[in-house]
Length: 335
Image (cartoon, rainbow, N blue to C red; front, side, top):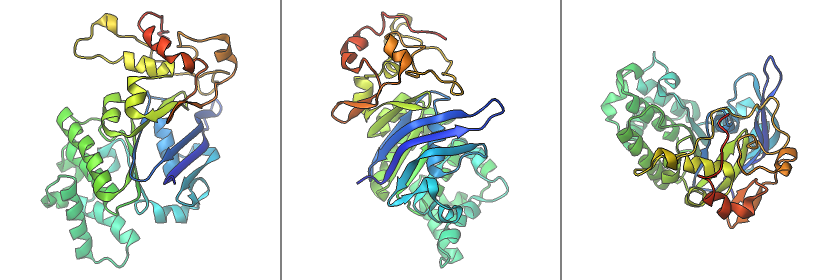
């Protein structure tokens, strides 16, 4: 049974120019003690999906339809009082910006123990501090830094404090939105390794949102690839990247340099995402896809299983071997 189940989720932002459908008909299953990666470029909807799950969308964002089932409760319809009860206790969130997410006028101790006192009122001050020091050790920080303020810590340390905040009440699931952004290579690798350790040690599930393919393949069990507000491919992480089926995933794989790559080995798909205020009638990737057909322009393809455990939304999914072999010979739009 899934720990978290997202079904047919649609999220919109209200703007002066009309509504923008940032997440469109997304479904996702998170199993207990699993790590699921959400991959996509900027503007694809992956961070909106993470915030929607947490019910922490900005004021102009709203869930228009769909369900977000956590255990036997629907987060999309949950009251604010009930949400406050389960945040940090059952589901926790690691945001992108460590410095922007920590309060500069409070010490690390004050920020870590706040969640303990809010959810476990019987805990004494000494017990809360001891727990805060314990979780700092768990994330690889010297507990003596507990009296420091955020500005006294390095970027890597601040990121570890956010990890500690997410783990301090041992929730069932943690949503990590670009948790390695801005970290140097050594700290990033340590954080990625630690995510797997925390999964094993605490028995938690993780949703890991990132634009970095290497990070996600290294860390996650399953991978969901997003483009234009939709999940276009989903399956075991290594299979999705080694043998991609959707043209967007094929393009992503072939746009990444390897040690012996030459410029001729790489492809460019362009930087402009589809207009989500007025999206294409058919496939969201149609304007960049070198394999598009007339059918691709008129109706969005069904999201279907094309091999055991892997689903995609592409009319030409059955030709995936051929599409992959042609990836470097065809013309990709640079718009």
